[in-house]
Length: 161
Image (tube, rainbow, N blue to C red):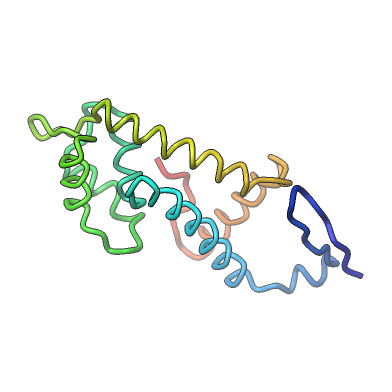
């Protein structure tokens, strides 16, 4: 018999293991993707950013002096599911004054770091909402299950670097 399980403002029904085991992973992983990525994209849009903007800012901030357009494009291309021209993203961030390019190397400006921090704060709030009522152990198990499914299907199951 299903019962409701509440946490915060959200209530979900509990089901027997047999019913949950019969659920299609494609549906649930797809719905999870749409909800999670939809929230991320909506939060980034507040700053006028796309996910590739976000990835660019974080990579450049995380390894100052390392990234050229070509090396960053090669790194980010596998994650882009929208076919966004990364050169347009780089140019947009340069035009905004968030990035500068010296000698072929991309560098985050103070304005860019401030924008990245605002987006980071929104991301942290979204993560808090997404993980409400989920223990660290359950979250880790979920990630490892998805990694195993991806690996079983021939995909890359290592953590992104």
